[in-house]
Length: 562
Image (cartoon, rainbow, N blue to C red):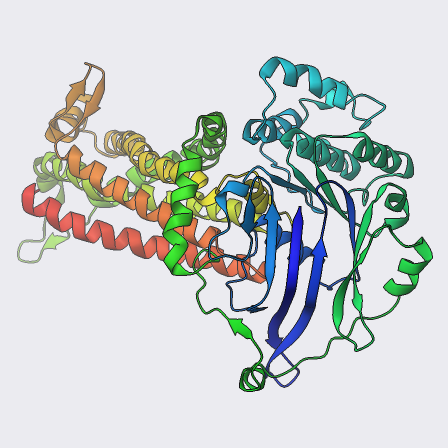
């Protein structure tokens, strides 16, 4: 049951002159849904339908500066007890009780059709056992329900049409089995026959006690609805929510929807002076006041370490590892190989000039004597400085930008994948950050380690090709053995100063993870914000890497002099 009492909310914006104004959305709503049934939530675009639903789901908190809430407002969800939706912290006990199918669907592109539905089943408060789920899914995909053939079960989402993706999103919601089911434009991308099948399926399904449908296709749903909440204006030109039980005829809503809602505004400062009870919150930490941010993190980590999420943690960890490490490996190794080529060539081909007094050419005399010493010093510089620094810069430039773009696409308000995780009771911050952190910390160390061998190969090729006195054994004694190699398990080599090598690369990887994650998960209002955040992440990553290497190199030189 959903209860709204004296509910009044405004949105704060600016007028044409740039002056701060408050625009009333809903005033003095008093509604009670009942314990079961189907409710249609109707109203013109911009009337506040999505805001109500997002508050019910905990996706939007009233504690943000953009919203003004009346002190007398009450928004309750009644299940085993009354839960206050407008409290300082969204009740964690509601996770799993309310589910939604977004208009933009919010499907997880990295999962197949079956995995999307199985994810919802695993996070449900009443998950179907494996055998029952394997029997239920083909029946759901039968022709008389969702019109999805059995060949679609293991298909990737990128090959599905818009209508097929919408059916998959509806199937995922059914697998979640919430007590309150919210459908946002469930027939928008469906043909007439499929839309009618969805209507019949909603009417026949008894899994949810309460179903709320936001739709412009209200004529199709009115025959099965027991109640209509209609956002309109009263005689005093105030926005109100009418409660129709039973629903009015379709012509009534058609006529009302043709009318424009009032959009008057008032000065918030004047309103406070006149004694109105609206209030504004100034904190914006994780969408809630900073006093309760740690509680949200606590519930997020507690949920992230539950057994039902481990399988999906591994699945997305594989996706991120492939995106950040495997796909970056060829580029990093290729760059390191050419680093070895170019650095060796210019290091060993300096013109020594001539002795002015005797005009005697001395380069051919000095070079053979000095070559081995130069090669020994170059090996240390390559291992301690050049290779790890270049590898970390390449990883930041390629993988850091990749994860920022990946998270930005999930955080996109149009795609709603980030919100979809939250509606399934999984905090995406605590779910994805450990994966990103592990990938970058160990990925930077691993790729830098492999890059050294690639650079060493380039050094060997140039040294042998350009110096007739250099052979494999000369290079091995001067370059390789100068690093004092030891072998782990008799196979895997590591060198003197390997601890500082790991410290540099792992610290740089940790910095890349934190910076890229922070920029990628920031809320964006336009595509220009995404571009600006990608540039910001890249700049901060480079600066952090240079600072880390500068500090650690000073320690490295002090404790392990060249």
